[in-house]
Length: 96
Image (cartoon, rainbow, N blue to C red; front, top):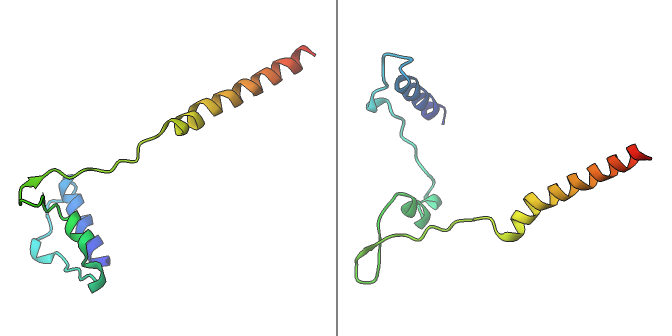
């Protein structure tokens, strides 16, 4: 991992124009993965096209984790209610 980090660091420096020499592709370290990591997830992340039963390339459905209605209520309305409650309490104590 250290060799890979060093290589990537030198690539970033060269891309930003902070060094004149870009590392050579022959210097790129080879990373070997254990056999158990070579599964369908690796192939799907590689960007291979998804084909239907007829062999036609189809777009992949991207699963999103969007915020639902309860999340919005808890994230916006609840803090607003707590703020208004604290403000009401403070103003009530000042009048007393």
